[in-house]
Amino acid sequence: MASPRLAPPPTRERLLGRSDGEPSLESEHRRKKPSNLLYDVDDVPPLGVRLGVSLQHTFLMSLGWLYIVVIVNSIGGTQSQAQSMIRMSMIASGLATIIQARRTVMGSGYLCPLSGSLTFLQPAILAARTGGFSLLFGMVTLSGAFTALFSRLTTRLRVLFPPEVTGLMVSMSGLQLVALGCPRFAGYTAAGSAPEARAVIVGAGTLFAMVAATIWHRGKLHVLPMLLGLAVGFSLALALGVLPWHEFIGDFNDPWISLPRRVSGGFAFNFWVTIPFFIASLTASLKAVGDLTLCQKINDADWKRTDMKSVSGGLLANGAGTVLSGIFGGSAQNTVSSSIGLSLATGTTSRTIALPTGILVIALAFFPRIAAIFAAMPPPIMGALLIYSACFIILGGFQLLTSRMLDSRRIFVVGISLIFGLSVEISPELYRYAPEALHPLFSSSTSLATVLVVLLSYLLRFGVAKERRLFFHPGKDTFDAIHDFMEEQGAVWGMRREVEIRAVHAIHEVIASVVSLNPFLKQLEVMVEFDEFNLNAEVEYSGLTPILSESAPTAEELSTDAGIAALSGYMIRGYADRVRIKQRDHVTRIQLQFVH
Image (cartoon, rainbow, N blue to C red):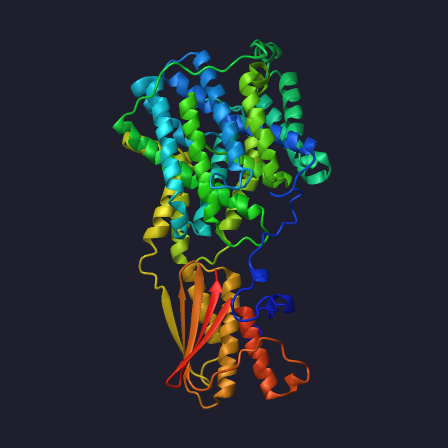
């Protein structure tokens, strides 16, 4: 029977989920709500909670609008042009956020807001300088089409996104939030400037208020920590002069209501500018894969692998949002990683929050005086919001990364990508002289690390055997040989630990049952193969075939050899998702399949 060094056998309920070696409807995977979530993706929180959480997501989305100001300033544009682009981008962001939460061909089915993306900053500046707003809007529209096309291919590319790859993507998104948040937190405005004590006080007060609400309060403040942090932060900023009162009031001189207008200019395209936009679209899409994978994981306590169908729909929503933004006269859209961190921190991931969030962002485009509140946010407060979200994003990525067994190959894949990704933030001058077309790749730590980890994961797969064999000699070899063999292969192939343990148990029981029926058997051959979707194992020998019972033996039957053999066969069915026995010319093959 099973070696004592292994985990106990499956429960009776699990075993009864299968009757004939095929997975039954009851044994199909169903999403299990994690205990740390107050409102998961299918729940409907109270209206007040939905509105409060939507407001928090809107504040985080506002960071993406700042990149538009940088783009417009790079070509000497006016404040009016920047405001027009921001307002048009807000409309596209709101629509894309609503679409993203839908469970259809277009949409991932998760709360994953969209906004302006740092990944597109460098190619957007290049396009604006080369051909003005017309070329910028044309290339944004084209990049959305790139993303939409890539979304149709992702269901066939699951092998490129094992958990260590998506985990690093998510972690790097969090680390990039740190790079953006810490300078703002400390009031660090430019190279050579010193951190400002008043800014640190404002940032620390904001961060502490959010942490306190999350840790020590289980009421409504637990799901609305950023609103408390913003109240504390703005109060401190006004009191300490970080946000002068006259400047704060000056931001509200716009009319209450006005129609957003598109910046004048049609659509233009340039082949050479297409290359950096294509690179940016690809890296932004890969980042979105990681973000959507984390959305799946935090909503399922039994998460096992990325649902590429959901990811495909999510990327299509991203592409649609970017196309709309280009047509309206805005910037490219991508998922907001910090919003996922907020969802995890507050335990509120309901997709119903996407509708009020999207409506609120769209409404702000028509109410510029209210939108000025977001524009007036002092950098230390924004820095505190990003640091707060980054904590959950980074650790969520690490959990994804370590959900599989890691061998030296996977360690190098993750390690090399992580090191060179961080080098962008630590030593940006290293990539100063890269070809202009490749600037989007080196524009952020997330972009470089994401592309590297996907490429290395694919390239270093070469040379890894998909099939391995072991010859087991009864009386000479111990069952530890099976355990060690599967543990080694599990690390090489990156199997989930749970699948490896079930396979070891099943092979143990098969060999024990076969040896008891064939006491003079000298050798069995064990073959295992893995393809990321399934682990297949086959035990081949010459001799009698064990009986795989469909029901557990009674206590009386267990007192006989036949009863013990029946229990072993019953347990084999429980461990494996599928069992087949083939016999030809006295050679028996017992085939086991484990869904991965």
